[in-house]
Image (cartoon, rainbow, N blue to C red; front, side, top):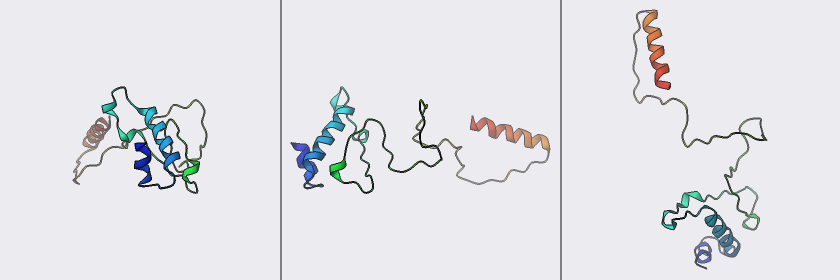
Length: 117
């Protein structure tokens, strides 16, 4: 009942079906220790052209955009999701390196490779 009241303040007229969906989603991610519930574990994605009556709950992740590449479907795939980029970090300041020999260039390159590992 309290979920309906909270939703009615934002989605008047759709509070009954949305309250059911919110309760279902929250129950799926509720930890054993209720005080440790994290609201970021429940996400909402709007599908363009949809309306609240078409809403449903899924387990997993919903991404509301098309794929960036040409692969649209893959079976038995191993997927990694990173919260941050995996590219090497750029430095905050710019500097100039003066190399006087090929040996210095090789040593500099080895040092850069070591930092990337």
